[in-house]
Length: 146
Image (cartoon, rainbow, N blue to C red; front, side):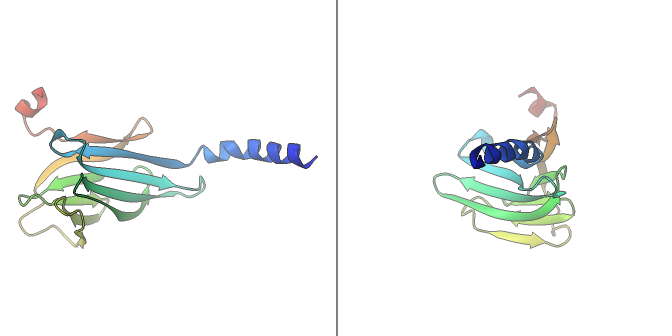
């Protein structure tokens, strides 16, 4: 009698997990799958209104690191900016972080706009149709044709 009861309870709990978020999207730097910035969203409990954001910085086979962006809403947009030095500024809501892909180790919170500006907007991680995706910024008509 205990086994059918356990199965019934498990079957009733499955729909509750449907509200959880666990997905990701990737920005391929220079069009390479080995050189990427990936954003991961995790919401382990359906009743939690926040998701935990993590950025994975990767330049394989040399390096790969996970860096926490912190809690955000499910629909928070995350912008990717590249400064002239090649480093990246990640803007999640009002918070900004700096990182790089040479060693993948550098990670620092940035307070206010950096000296010299934000650089070039490469694109935005955002939710489209319920799924996290990376939307590339199109700089000019020549890039749009590609």
